[in-house]
Length: 105
Image 1 (cartoon, helix red, strand yellow):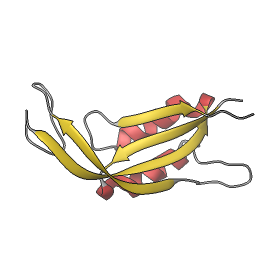
Image 2 (cartoon, one colour):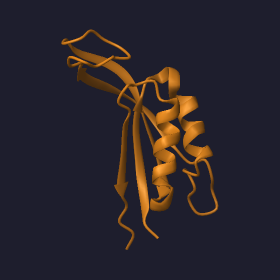
Image 3 (cartoon, helix red, strand yellow):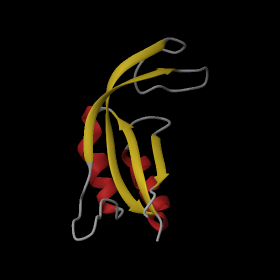
């Protein structure tokens, strides 16, 4: 079975709701443990382009802001459901959700 690491950038105000959505979709299971995740603060950078509707910032201006990075895991078969669950609660127009395959020797 292929396991994936999930990385999500989100404003601190939405960390709990995104983590809850992840776990409700089946992410966060490691062996006999459930609801496993990590969160740390990061600085995000972005520039809203014409046609966008930014959650934060001003159109055309390079922005820098505090965000949180959430990490968890899921099985590859759960990825689509996890992605949709996160997008349903994430405040950004373009939610940053990375799925990275994990090497398991």
